[in-house]
Length: 301
Image 1 (cartoon, one colour):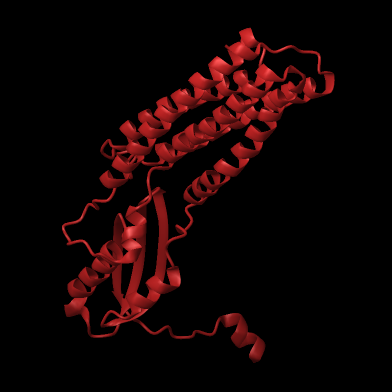
Image 2: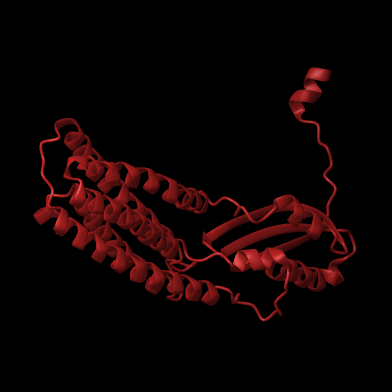
């Protein structure tokens, strides 16, 4: 329809929808693979495939955006093109309808995937804490990426429909065609920057924004017989699946309570803070003795 109407706005909408279709295929493939059991080589499983799928989907749109921006600038400068308003109007209306259906389906898919992630692999009863609720509320990055694309398509399609209506009845305002591409480019940046930030945090193994490391340390220190926290590492396998490793030092003479302390620490991390997996390492506190090195002794002499 865009080629027949000679409308860059329609071609932009169609190519973006084609990109979203490939993104959806990548999303479904990633969700299928991420549900597979861990292997000897990939002991954490394939959860990061969702993150990889989200990045590829966003990059495809950025490449498309750069190409269409170039074409829009050329049309704005030259103004040597004619547009068939009737075909543009019909095609734009069909595009709006398709994007409404696509957005609805992806939104439902995101809710279902979020619920499937809300059951941690633990036999410990669940807590109703706000931290756990926020963690379980995160939906898949891959589904979010595809849904944001569909939402951007819908907004763009509505804009194209308005532009088609203007061009159909006011052909002298054909500049509305490349203007749609400019607006689309801005919307792409605004709607995908959050996804890129989230994927960046996951790839760099940063702490999810809904967790406070200082608060976690404070609560761990409140457990009886915990003397200090030697080390605490928190990262995400993918959105909504946070993992933690903590190394605790216990007060001297508390070796008989190790299992009790470990259970309390696991319950705190899994239930209160909504961790997907956690590992708790314990050791008795040993005061470090300062030793003077030979070079220091010789220098002082």
